[in-house]
Image (cartoon, rainbow, N blue to C red):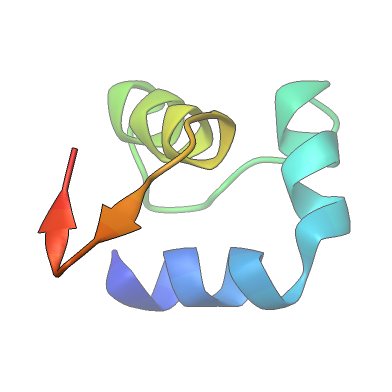
Length: 52
């Protein structure tokens, strides 16, 4: 899973294709793919090593 996320970070155009259902992640369930795509939509804030 980590490798998939790292690959998508390096290839952001694939995120768009996944959202448009023009591509899929082989070996990843629909629920996992949905969670991965949601993680790219959310903004993470870092302050003093705390995530919130």
